[in-house]
Amino acid sequence: MKIVVDDLSGPEIAEFLTAHVDQLRAISPPESTHVLDLDELRRPEVTIWSMRETGDVIGCAALKELDADHAELKSMRIAPTHQNRGLASRLLAHITASAQQRGFSRLSLETGSSDFFEPARRLYAKHGFTPCEPFANYQPDPNSTFLTKAL
Image (cartoon, rainbow, N blue to C red; front, side, top):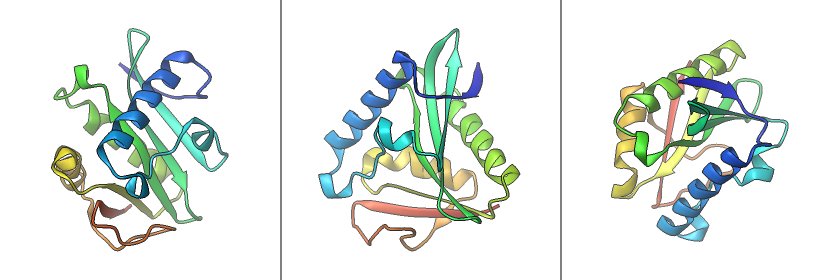
């Protein structure tokens, strides 16, 4: 298993991210779906990593620079067939370390508030994320949970 910066040019990562976007759009109301599409993930302020095993994409996560001190975790996903192996924790630790190396002092994220997102909220809490007010351009939303962590 390896974690690499991905340029989003391969069909495997595009397919993986399309499945992610489709799933989130099916679960959350449109006004509460804050997932980035491929074009948005290609912006210069975003870095995305793919987690690969024997060449297959089994996970991904992105880091979006909000300002010189603050970054946002985006597009965190582990393939359903690879869940419950500790891979999400490994990927989250990798992204957190990258954010620290880049000099960010805060890492924040938005995730859903429904039961579907409970495993994600538990993962983030396990890694030191705590509830916060909406940040960046987010607005209060009963379908969203906002979390942050000082680095």
